[in-house]
Image 1: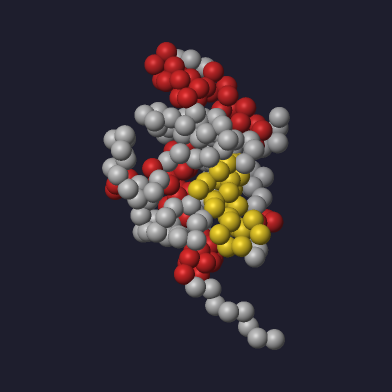
Image 2 (image 1 turned 90 degrees about the vertical axis):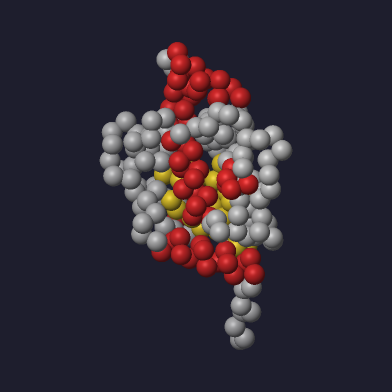
Length: 202
């Protein structure tokens, strides 16, 4: 039997980046694989949020886990208490010139920068062009030097520190602002419910 033809272009790059991420021992809390082994353009990821995250972490701080598995092995550490959020990364054929899209699966994090549908709104996933509304510079948006690793690290950072300047979820942004200024508790209540759901407790 003849060997399969080598992957080229975007497919080859994605296959290499996936392999590198799965073997990297310095990526705590990130697990990734393919939704379907025959399609390297569709990834499934799990973000295991560290326990020190104010809204999506656990109640009892423990060292964050490190997981690198194929799509059928996305299993969180039993000692992990923070949220376990699953998401899909969908890469275009024009990758890396154009960015992928990232969509959280149920339960969707209640967050100012995540649409209720699960779609993530973050500068690094926006096409490499100037923002006509003036919220972002071209340097903040996607460029071919970015990678799936930098995307996921940026999203984890966003879960730690929401950006309410141009919210994707207006209700979440309003409640988050209320908590920052007036000590409101509804935002925290909603995020804690997301954490429990992600851990199978609700």
